[in-house]
Length: 484
Image 1 (cartoon, rainbow, N blue to C red):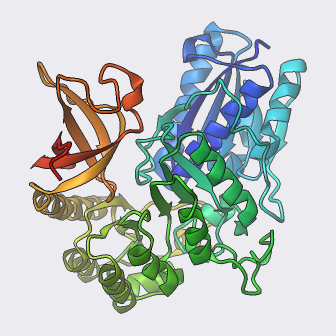
Image 2: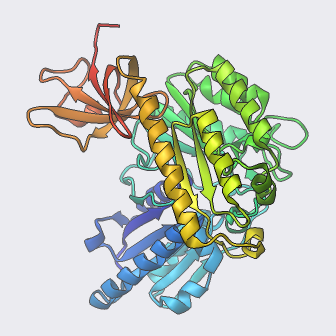
Image 3: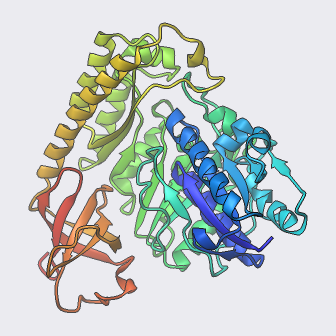
């Protein structure tokens, strides 16, 4: 097999980070990353948090099956949550799939792919859950790999910005022990395993040395970092050693790191020390994704979320006391089994009370093996869809109002890429402010201090801007050098 490859990624930032690592690891072994039309190996990194992204995986493999008939010898590997869920079933349905690997199996995937290149008859499954976080080959200093193609259909926050050079995603843990009634993650990513703090800190330092201005710490539930019985490394165990709040402080103290973020948080586990950190760590961004899921205590109880409305609102009050400018975003599920109209209205009420800047909202769909799959009564699809539209309409209104309130303010934007918005005679770059909001920045015709407007050095520049106008889901700004 020609050692050329192309990676397509569905889902969350953890999948984006996994694909980036795998690309670098393969390049280090002599593989060549190519556009789709030139590749003989396709790696599809998958998500099964909802039914829709899972179905998109089958659609992608169906497309590759048609492509494979025109290009005999084409080979595919399927990784991530759907691979863990379906396993060897992919071999039967798609004969050109020769490797399946779960989230723990990715560490061994480069060796497996080398074997496939040497043995045209081999098929390999890496689906075993490991007892501790599987550290991977250090590939950060290896050149040649680029960010793989990405599909953010699963709705992960900030998922449309996959690993630009000035931004880095760093895994601190894997798996989850919460077993929320609707969630397949514990079954596809396994039980919680914290990464050794020394490994996390070493990777963060390396990322900063390589030019990262912003780091996002990743985990299914970062607030419970270090509390699992399999945690490894000095002090990072259930006996009261290094927890998430202290890890945050140590990462924030790395010289040269301008911005620090983390996701995702479970409200039941958020530590008061983490809340205080928003007011105490200058480079901890005033942005938090705090999934609510539902506003009804009865629904939250059936979901197994282990908090109620009052507890959630108390957390929000504490967060805003620590950092008044905090931008809160959330996840919301409508149509959970047994949800009545009054339950749904309580969710809308919570949206009004908290004023989330944005939300990822979905209509409930059964996932195989989870507790909610057996719950009754199911909410009719038409009712769930109608509620979703009402919720999203309310959210759109709140988002517009919160963005409108920012007009005229000055802030800093970390530039990421050329903006899709390009007016005649004007150039725009896209970036994000400390709250994680998308900002399209109008560039001047003359040379900008410290950068070349026509070239890539703009990527990763931190620039001062003034917000000119709020759009539906983004902001328009101008540079304000020397005016602050």
